[in-house]
Length: 112
Image (cartoon, rainbow, N blue to C red):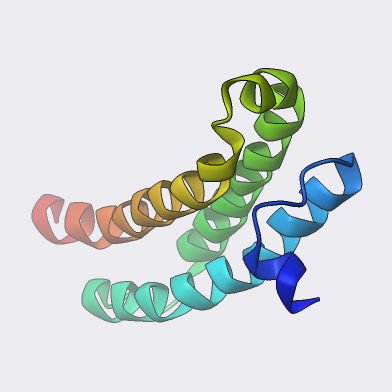
């Protein structure tokens, strides 16, 4: 199991691709949780319903990463870029998600 989670060599079957992204979703949500808490504290929002919607929306968008990989798998395998696709896109998407989470309190603080 450890080899499966930390390896990029398991891209032969569709369910392995989905499983890899779903296992990394746990890590993604653990990374995002403290940033969300800090963001709520910065904005001083008493009812963080906005953050619930943002979190759900970001997780829906996260699902698109596995769909993109499944749709483009033949080209990624041909080019040999599939090995870097997962890690690179996981990192890029995590950074963009952190930016989105801090965008809300920034807008609240500067527009209020």
